[in-house]
Length: 320
Ligand code: SF4
Ligand code: SF4
Image (cartoon, rainbow, N blue to C red; front, top):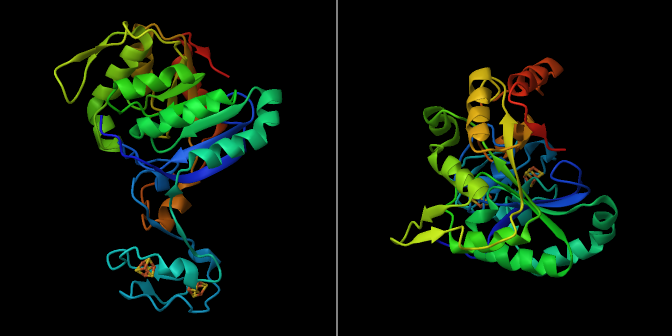
């Protein structure tokens, strides 16, 4: 696997109760091999830095107008012509109102460990810890391995949220024993629908899931050598497949039963669902992606109940 060195982090969320057991600090890595149309963290899709423009903060002082390629358009509201912007980021310092910001900052292992130490008492009393999310943390396996080793040496529990669309490799495998839990997203059962909505087919996601559930053999992408997971004894983290519920796309009964059948076939017992969150739309707009077709409301209780009903017959245990 290609390791991309030091990743960018697009956010650190403190005191989360939604990203694993207990109180957790969530680290969002920037960069993802998929590009889901409903991505809750659109700033985490691209690996490279981007300019975030929060136009509603603009106080119309015009201090930013001195933009070398004249990409900043007079408001109100202030706008950026993304085709002209060369990402010099000078507007960040020029604006007194904080309208502009970087979408990511370089990850720093020591800074994350320091934060974890400061929160250790909350983790201990709640059964929480650090959750690695994104984007896709496994795009940076060497960095993540170094990070999880440091966190485990501090006695911190580590959870990972993954889209599963990453080639398994010895570097990725080395991370697994350090994880308490993996949330493994399974979004669409139909390969063509997965291609349409996520930018790639689902074969790698399902193949990796099978290997992680059953143990087995994968062919490394850059060599003819097979990697036998059964020979690499490791403490398996708890693996919880998770279905993001997106109205009209992933929450339709045919998709839910297709995913549930595949998971049952693998012997999966525990699953989780992730109800749709529309707050990503404003974040996408701040990156210059208007998200015209987005579902803008929260899921209703009825929609959620229908999705749960479609899964109920498969008799999974729900992971809490
Ligand atoms: S990043 Fe540079 S080019 Fe882009 S809008 Fe800001 S000042 Fe202009
Ligand atoms: S410097 Fe900031 S607050 Fe002033 S006009 Fe530009 S975007 Fe608006």
